[in-house]
Amino acid sequence: MIGVPVDAWYVWLGLSVAGMVLVGVGAALPTAPPPAAADAADTIDRTAATAHPATAEHPLDATAVRIGPRRIGLRNDAGTTHAAIGFGPVVPAAGSRELRAVLRGAPPDAYFDSGTALCDASSDTRERPPRWRPVDDPLIVRHVVWEGCDVTLVG
Image 1 (spheres, one colour):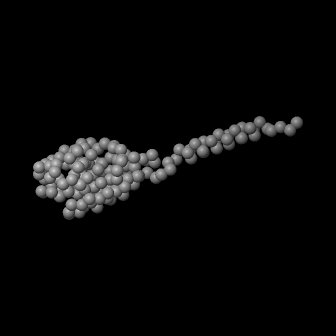
Image 2 (cartoon, helix red, strand yellow):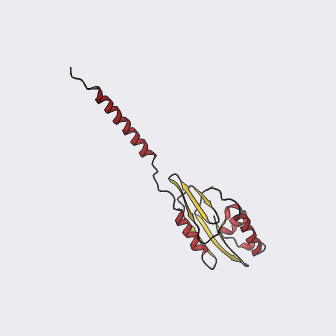
């Protein structure tokens, strides 16, 4: 009688399990790279470093963003990255309806009585701890110089 040695079945079974594990690991790997927080920080720095009012947009390949006065964090299914903002502190505009409106192009005098009021609102918003927020638009950066107030809004 011709038979297969018992050891061959164990080898076959071990190779089958190893193959399934490799397929599972390959399927779990991310299909895209982690988001580029350094590129977003560069856009913020270029806009904040100007001496004049300026606006910039940066497309985000992230599902969530966290903007602090001196750091930005981005995350997606492939991971989380952070980058320092060199020309900070910046103002995360998500914490204020008025600051969001100015960030999106409204003149500051439509929402604030003076440059001092704009600076006070910016300071209050900047002091709040940063939170992860969903990304639904590109990153917008606006450097505002108005009545002695010089702020960079980010959202």
